[in-house]
Amino acid sequence: MTAPVITEVLPSDGPFCESSFRISFYLPKVNQANPPPAEGLHIQKWKSTYLAVRQFSGFVTDYNVGVEAAALEASLADTVWSPAIKKFQKDETTSVYLVAQYNSPFEFSGRVNEIWMLADLEDELLPV
Image (cartoon, rainbow, N blue to C red; front, side, top):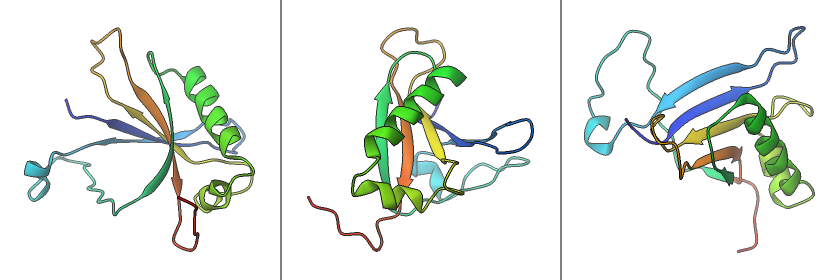
């Protein structure tokens, strides 16, 4: 298994409020030049990226992902990070976030997960 397994969550504002999900698997450096072919596989290459991250434990559920994403967003409100995060949002009411899971589904304790929010700092100067 590769780690992390990343799930991109795009909450919907539609009539049934169904979210869209995209699952991504990290490909180790040794396999990145010639990834194995697979039907429906889409390769994503990330450039250097800034993320706001909140770590949490346990198994990932719809409930705790929502709670952790809301907590991360609240912790960023009224900070210099907030405008950089907003650049990746679809609109003022919908956040785009990712869930990173680092453990095998067969590991029951010591689980590590993260909520990621992408930040566009191209035009921002943040204090160090």
